[in-house]
Amino acid sequence: MKNKFLPEQLAEFEKSIAENAKDQAGLLKSIHLAQKVFGGVPVEIQRVIGKHHDASISKISGIVTFYDYFTSDIQGKNIIEVCVGTTCYVQEANDILKKVCEITKCEPNSTSRNKEFSVVIGRCLGKCELAPNVIINHKTHNKVTIDKVTELLKGI
Image 1 (cartoon, rainbow, N blue to C red):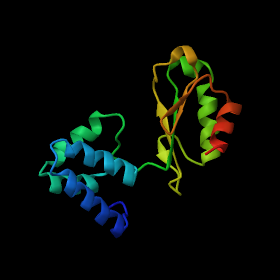
Image 2: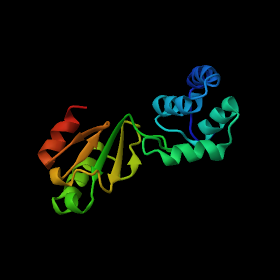
Image 3: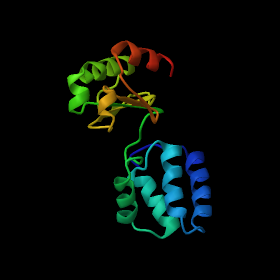
């Protein structure tokens, strides 16, 4: 496996998805569980899910890539998405992104070495009237300034 997973973690995951395999909606439940447990649904885990649900990798990968919530990359414990769409961009979103990267020691669209943070570049969060916008751990923050994002990240 490319990613390193703890044997206990994999065993517990397989036990849980074996239960999900009995349920018609179990495939999606197993993908959700993988996202929660591993911080993503990489190909190695997609294979495990496929084995238990008798589903092809292409079917599972299709689900993972279709829904914005899922990712095939392992993400950090804390996910910070900075919108750099046009409205946010003209309101200094790039400076906010630089500050986030400085604080987290993480490049845009990557995960920090310690797996504590993932910084994601967002293209439009659909809240242009409240720009600039940042999502931290699935919670949207509007009219963000450099000072505000610094405070928000200190709170993590």
